[in-house]
Image (tube, rainbow, N blue to C red):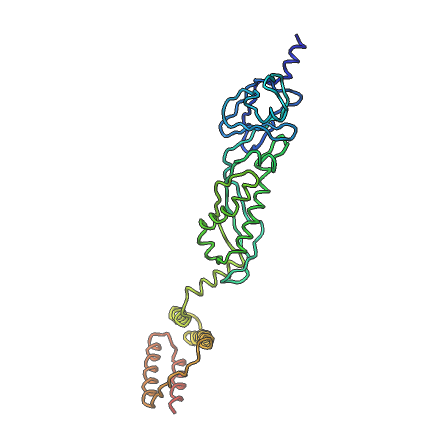
Length: 340
């Protein structure tokens, strides 16, 4: 009786695979020294494919369903083993199960910044990261190129290879593209679609279907981002002369409260105007040279009226306590000296 029980254990009459956790892509059915009983039952569940391999040669593949293993359901294996139609003996074959479920939330990212030539900023270094999803579409190709004879092949085993493929393709795309960094960052959906098109044939080579590819972020290293922020700030400012006037107008009330009063403001105003004049001169030099119209010459009467008006305004500041009497007298003497 014990001998008969031992013999019975050498034959397999039911073959099936229940996934014991997420992340398994391929699993070799444990055959050991067992043989498959002719007419055995094969169960393939949804999101699975079973593949029979005879001495390294790929034979029959089975999608979801319930099968009785005979020469009729195993035509390729029958040919490989040279069975005749009357064959009904137990046989040996390797059986592999593959999971065809979508593998979601696979992350990718540039471990180091990628150097690219940007048409607006010149040479820059940029980073990018996102997610993608895929599934096994061709089990024969996947078995030949990836999983082979391993007992188990998981998502983690494949993750590094796929991530490196993504980064390599991303680097090529950035290098070949004439799209500026600003446009890439503003059109991440379009960038993701372009990357998916570029990666699809690469995934197909391994028997995989790239289902989705998402670019979640495109950015510059921190030090370059500061430079970009400064440039954006300058573009927002626009007219530097008006910006300087605005800053000076806001600083008058503060200057009046500080030690030195308007005299301190004068020094700051001179510095600000100096910067504005320097920038104006630089901009003027870059424009086509044209002869400026002659400036009208102010008459002595006009200059005298201007000085009087200025003294009146300064005297009003003395009355408000913004300007001291000594500061007013000094400014008065300076203005009157210009009329002599």
